[in-house]
Length: 299
Image (cartoon, rainbow, N blue to C red; front, side, top):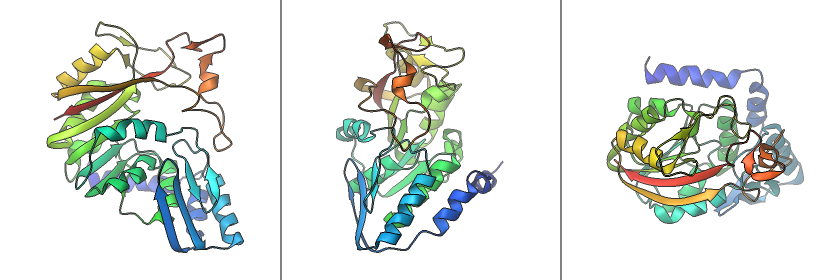
């Protein structure tokens, strides 16, 4: 199947009955003049030429697009307090990359929070990959006002080898543990890079000196589609099998409720509900609590 056909099929998902009303809300958004924005911990968009009715319409549209996972954002006075304080991860990683003049891809980009933050480094091109119709709609909502040149593709990591061009830098943050074949996923990332290209990766990990991985039978931290949680030696082996080199461990960080928590902008539960109430070092299933490893590697 060609990439053009895949794109067409994915874009049709925007017409699904649960997404179509959101798309209609987007179509009725006001056009605001004299917009200015800041790309700090909160991606903030504002204007001196907006009235109260327009602010309320924008707020109602934002609420209709819940749940908001990555952020935060603030649009014309409406603060979208997302489940994840995504600036914690971004600020941890930012000292380790330079995107000036680079062609950059973000795999599993969600609503584009990291991509918007990356604009401040003046990359040559930014492309986000995520098949979710909801996250594409949230991105379109933000970009309706931001008017950036970011390209959002409703594609997955498996489409990288088919893509029209290669990338100087690829980010793959919080994706690898969702893939049933992590080595093949890393091979696809490798194939998506230019020579000397750089991968920035984060994934769940477990402690240990041997190259093994936790394989949950049903859920991990109440997440159903977690297949493998490796030790760092196992992750290094996966990367080497995919032909990556110059592998560098950047950081290890336990996920805490400062970074991930329930807010009014999501539905259901969050990290505090995923951990053993009697021992927060364990998940409700009895596994080690979520911990992430951050890696940089070269093609």
